[in-house]
Image (cartoon, rainbow, N blue to C red; front, top):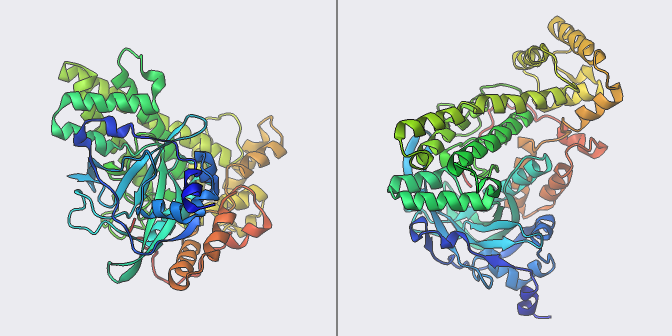
Length: 491
């Protein structure tokens, strides 16, 4: 069977609804061809979700699609325009090194964006080369798959290919292209772009398109634009709470990196926290700690306020009334977020029902963890299995007092100890993508062309709540070298 025949059997079922928006929202263009592409990893579960044939995706014809040398039949590639507050400063932006190839319609009728990241320069590249390096593309693949396994809404990665071409950053690096799958790439920044253009009709068209695509249930609401704002706030409150519950730090929560769908998007200088601290920052460019772990909820509501501002002309014909409606909607974020976070923390401690002192119990544990430099994930894991000797503050009197209060709280609930233990097992991951393990996998791939380290890591991360013997080694902390871990905005 020829590659052309096999490519026809890949299962592409494409549509281009975004391209039916006004042309100011995008620039039609094809990816820039690369010299010698090679497939490094293919995500077969994502391929199956999309209704694609994994065998056909391993052919040369499919490789040409992943590399941007060809586009599948029915595709209409384009670079999306958007704006954004980057570290608090507004800029007009756009896809500087990515192209939306098309939208895949799955056998179940779901719609997913298919985007190539690192596919070459666009009109929004701002003098950049539009390319990406292998390490950051593999990093996004690893972290996004780990987030999916943890049950957190996220974009996914279908494939990574090397290009056979080098790119120049601080040094010469292998070029690569990632195929990203997303519910959409609509961002707060997309709405900011429309608002900045000042065309209310186009803003309304964008809002209506977003509602049809992600929030069809509110399409007939009396004020569907207010309902859109409210639904986006709900999804972001849940998403950020989930980040906080697993110790995830996005690292660059600019408004162009907040997806309207409620997915985690743009894995740049992100990382998972080891030692618990609200002040944790990994990103080398976040010099003012704007996006520190503990700041993420308030940055989320700040970003949502920028989204609300764009919708004001649609919320009400009277500006004062529009502002009032927006403020009322935004005022609910704190309660929504706190409810999700508190419910998640109760689950991590095996607590059923609600008691007035639960939050105080939770906050005291977190205070002790920060004071004693305890590992976030492993502390909850040790509590789950009663391995108290593994907790760094286990010998302190304060922890002993906390433990007594926790045991007393568990003893007052009608659910069995077995049910409580199972709740903790399903709420506290055995493993997260530890920074040193991620770096180990990337080094093997970049320096030796060895992808087996990454594949083993992905296997371990694929079921984080298994608590299997194979996961023990991946729960170990890195050796102390005295240097703070730093991440870089390479994606």
